[in-house]
Image 1 (tube, helix red, strand yellow):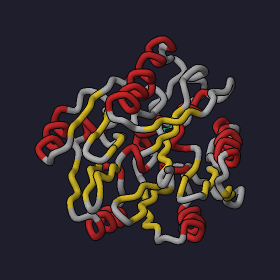
Image 2 (cartoon, helix red, strand yellow):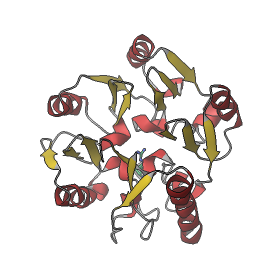
Image 3 (cartoon, rainbow, N blue to C red):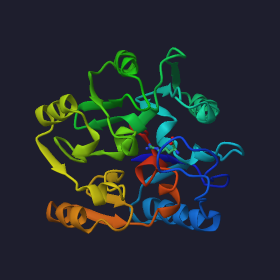
Image 4 (tube, rainbow, N blue to C red):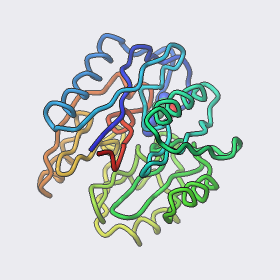
Length: 266
Ligand code: ARG
C-alpha cells in the first residue's frame, strides 16, 4: 500500500470552515509536527507502508489533509473542487504531483464540488460517497463515469462529520465501522443493504475521530482514546495502533484525513 502525506510546516488554524475549527484555539506547531512525525513513522517504519510526500506550501494550512486532494484510481487522478475558497489553492499542487508521475488528470466541472477521498471510500468492491456538506451529489455520477464503477451516494447531515471519512471506515470487504448520527435515513438504508457487518460507534468515540482511521490490511491506526472500538476491533483480529492527533482534530481532521491512498502503485 502507498500513501501520500504532507508535512505540517505551514499547518495552523487560519480560518473556520467546520465546527471543529476556531482561530482562538490555535494548534501548537511543535506538537503538531511531533504528532505528524509519529504517524508517519508508525506507518512507514512499523507497518511497512510506503509513504510518499507532497511539499508543504505557505498559505495552504490544510494541505496536510491530503485525503482531500482528489481521488486516485488506477492511473487516473480526479482533482478536487473544494467547496471553500480558502482550500482551492491546494488542488493545483496535487494535480502537479500526479501529472509529474504520469497519471491521467481529470477535472470535474468547476461548479461541482468534490473533496476527493475525504468523501469517497471503497468498501470491498463498492464505492461509497458522501454529499451535501462538502461534495455535491452530482460529483458522484461524474466520478463514477471516470472510474467506470458504480458509486453509492450517502447523505451526510451532521456538520461535525462533514466528510464521509469522519463517520465511515471500511475495514475490508463487506465490513465497516460507522457513526449512525452522521447519516440521513436513506443513507442508513444504503449502508445496511450493502455492508454485511456494520459496526456502530458511540458518539463519544466518534467525536474522538474513531472512524477517521487508516486501515492497512489487519492494522488500524487511529487517534488515541477510543477503548471501546479498539477492543471490538481487536476481538475481530485487527491490531489497533493509537497515536495522538489532538492538534489536527482542532482543524477537524485525524489519521485518515492526513493520508491519500494511492492504490495499484507498484
Ligand atoms: N480543515 C479541513 C477542512 O475543514 C479538515 C479536512 C479534514 N479532511 C478529511 N478528509 N476529513 O476542510
